[in-house]
Image (cartoon, rainbow, N blue to C red; front, side, top):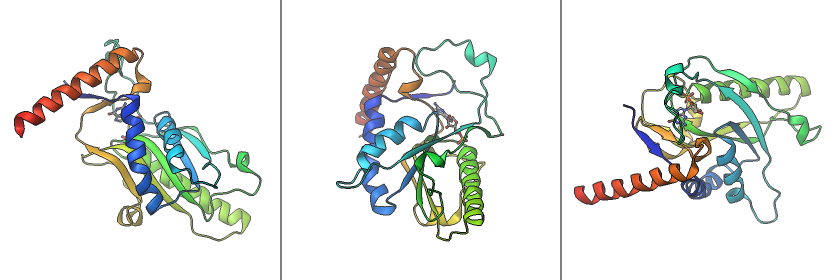
Length: 221
Ligand code: 5GP
């Protein structure tokens, strides 16, 4: 049985709040790219904490990437609180990509600091795909527009699972601390609040888990 970890909206909010100063200190993003669907809500919350007085809100663009397929056996659980682990996919499929024209005719990725946001880094395949494809877009824009300037990508996830990764991220990103996870966790299945169809039950489970962990912690202390 795969262990589940329940997170409330407040937990997500506080993880974003906690991470924001480090993101600002290290990176100061000019554009956020949320990987849908799990990156949308963290990206929006984060933006409030990244807002600097006198500066406009950082624009958020969305890309849709899909890696996991639901197994028929998983759907039989009928869980109202976060669903079940899904079969691990190996191929990343684009379901949505950037629309930079929405940011104005001259906006492109060249020379920008871009923060990619997702909820969880599991096998890392999705993040590898996102960075690789976005870097290709930068090269295309450079060639097409004849503009120079270094584009830097950074990543923020709520959770990084501490496991063997199938995907890799650029070495300089890792070495320069441009990969940031609010929490590094074990290989449990994390149930995020936006997946719950019964949010009260979800929150109850999150709360009871918190109480259990607290008791366990006291036992060990
Ligand atoms: P990766 O490409 O890193 O294997 O997987 C990324 C995607 O898989 C995530 O964006 C998410 O949709 C899904 N995923 C992987 N692990 C979990 C988990 O523990 N909980 C939830 N809710 N989704 C997960």
